[in-house]
Each structure stands twice: as C-alpha cells, then as structure tokens.
Length: 55
Image 1 (cartoon, helix red, strand yellow):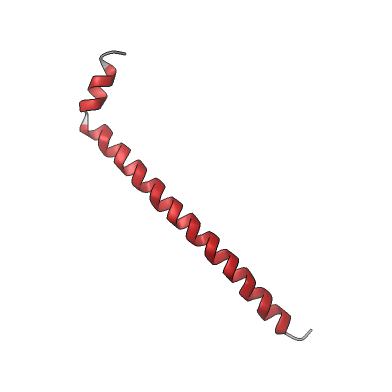
Image 2 (cartoon, rainbow, N blue to C red):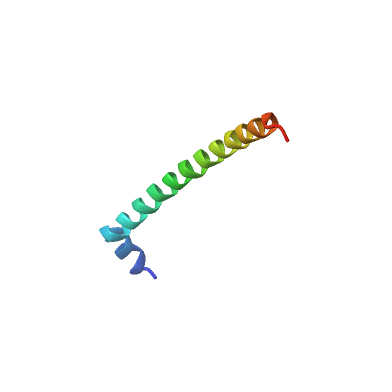
C-alpha cells in the first residue's frame, strides 16, 4: 500500500482521469439544472395554453 499511493500520485494518467471526472460532474450539474429550470417553465406554459383552449 505504501508503494501504491506514491505511484498513483506521480502517474499523470490518473490525474487526467480525475480532472475529466470533475469536469464531467460540473457539466452534468449544469445540464441537470438547466433541464430543471426549463421543465418548470415549460409546464407553466403548457398549462396556460391548455387553459385557453375551449373544450
């Protein structure tokens, strides 16, 4: 175990994977937040349109 941690610390590929993971998490958070905001607004718009259509 003592040899594994220094090896991983020096391994640049592991750092690249960690950086890509953080970037992917940030991008996914932005996408989920955007979909959440658009979803709420779309629901309000569809409800307004549905209430104006005569039955």
